[in-house]
Image 1 (cartoon, one colour):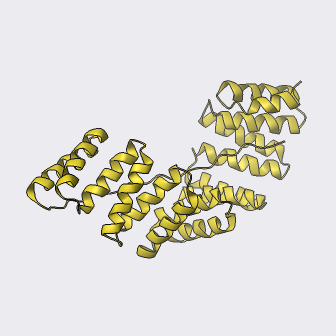
Image 2 (tube, helix red, strand yellow):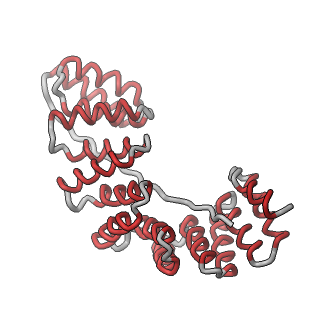
Image 3 (cartoon, helix red, strand yellow):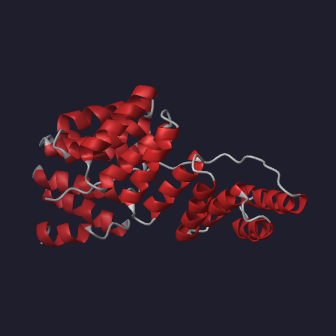
Length: 272
């Protein structure tokens, strides 16, 4: 039986800084920044276009337009703006970090890793870049490299719950199921309402054939997130593996009803 997996992706926030150039360009820049702070990203792009028309060397205007485009899901446009920032200021670490995130959005994980690495060169203690590089490495199947990055994050911040969670995910991929149980347990200790960590710990326990304990973890995840389709799917598989086919198939059907349509394949194979 193929167990369903959940990878947590870490999100970033970028600080806004003020800058002044010519008065008119500065007016448009400030207008764009204000619009962005109010989540009026279309208005922000319009104002920042005007700022760039006046001053084509405005690093901040390109950067904040990139942020606005990213929020509008114009990832390629955002990448182009961040590339222009880097062309104008090769040490602008926030541009490398933001471009890396955009590259991850378009599944260019190799490019993202390159940009995260450059961010880390400029700012060695930037755990956002290190952690996100680890996630990009997962996507390129470099699980040991990803573990190294999560180890680094945990060394800097021993209470980083997402780093424990993502390292646990990697340990499943390399077959270290007991290590995955331990890391998920640490994530749960740090955040007792972390439903995804209960689910991933349950998956690791299934690999160890501890189906009873796995069912307990999946049930806890469902208690925390009552429509958690992934937990229903895996609990269904665990119940079937432990001999409770009837209730296992009910869980798989619930997973499909909750939106996890891939569980239908298991229903077709195991429940007929």
